[in-house]
Image (cartoon, rainbow, N blue to C red; front, side):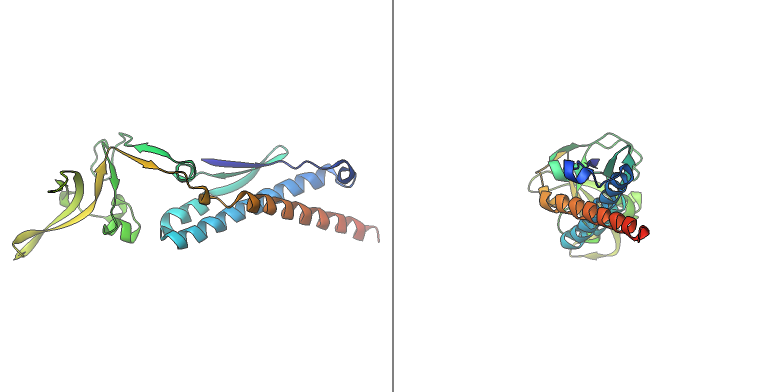
Length: 211
């Protein structure tokens, strides 16, 4: 999970104009605007990378809430923190929804895999379990997962149609990617702009009441 928090500190001069209610509203709105900035960033990223389902899920999993005088923005989508900070992923050993057995390897789809092209998981592909097989590359001897379908007729000397789905690896290492989030300048600017706008609206409303 990624967690960002917003704490607003007022200067001595400005503090005389800001009520506790103002500060609470400024913090809450800043958190909401920071949340919206992240959501839009993830949506833009989904269009740029082609991983629409994944980054759209990140946008949906971005929320903001108040914790006392602090606004907290969280991104709970699995893997976003890993993309941001980098690290090594290994098979969890959890039961696979496809095979019903503990996972021992990670499935890494290649550029020609229908999973990569359609941006879906193996479970979402709906491939019959009896057509999913582990094969080995003739050149590298590396294991890969494939869909093997029986043909009614021979084709180029083969009775089966083999569609590679992805390599089976024990671990995968991701490099850090700071572009997963907006830049520090964009994050700071979003908070400052929101706080100033909220305070200006609050002061204007108070002045209008006294006219």
